[in-house]
Amino acid sequence: MDLWEAIITRRSIRKFTSQSVSDDLIQKLLRAGMQAPSARNKQPWHFIIITERILLDKISDIHPYAYMLKEAPLGIVICGNIYIEETIDYIVQDCSAATQNMLLTAHNFGLGAVWLGIYPREQRINALREILKIPQNVYPISMIAVGYPAENKQPEDRFRNDRIHYNNW
Ligand SMILES: Cc1cc2nc3c(=O)[nH]c(=O)nc-3n(C[C@H](O)[C@H](O)[C@H](O)COP(=O)(O)O)c2cc1C
Image (cartoon, rainbow, N blue to C red; front, side, top):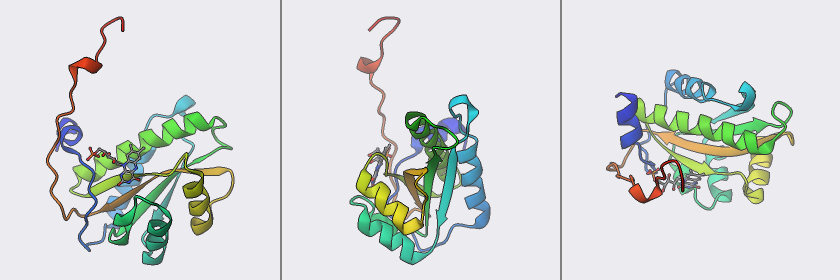
């Protein structure tokens, strides 16, 4: 699959088979995340790989829109370190760029994935800090649930001419 096809056909996948994701593919997802652009090239990210069923279930219980973690074989939490990049707004943008790279890479390799919002929801941040023992200087920004798709989602055309402004608003 080329990049264009990946961008145009990627959809959120929330149903997964029980097949686990290989270490090789996990490495590719991590490499894709770390290739993302970041403000001043600070690369403030950390990634928490979660394959333990008990942890995936716990996170599903504290997140109102993460029911799919109950069957996903893999979750990855994308975090930003405020000691590396002191501006939280840049951390959010850097980690979001990493997250999207990982979603597209998952799709490219035949995996399905969905973005789960964490930051700026205090309750989710605090609960994840507790469950995963994340230090206070590290902010969990987003999470992805990953696995082999057990649903088939068609691409959606979202192109809108009314959102485009040439030279002036
Ligand atoms: C910042 C952000 C937070 C999101 N949080 C959740 C979430 O908590 N649970 C979920 O199922 N999907 C979540 N999504 C996925 C969106 O619902 C999804 O991307 C959107 O409906 C468009 O569908 P698509 O990904 O299939 O193109 C999130 C997406 C973004 C960008």
